[in-house]
Length: 75
Image (cartoon, rainbow, N blue to C red):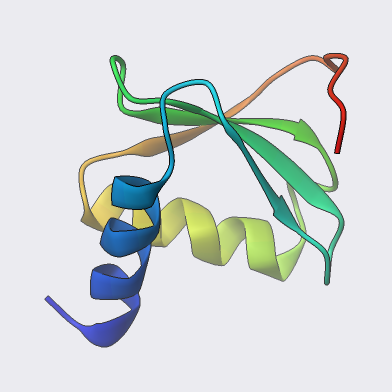
């Protein structure tokens, strides 16, 4: 496993089920679902380079990125 995969694995290990992950550089907001091993993209451009990179990293570690509908959250 490479460094990016190790980093994302550590990040996911530190996030609780149902928590949000915000990537400020592209204003992406994702919600973690550990039971289904998915992150749901709630806000941001799913076609941006960062979202595509995250989707590839998630696939490398057995997760997937889903495109979801907007959801109320408190940042």
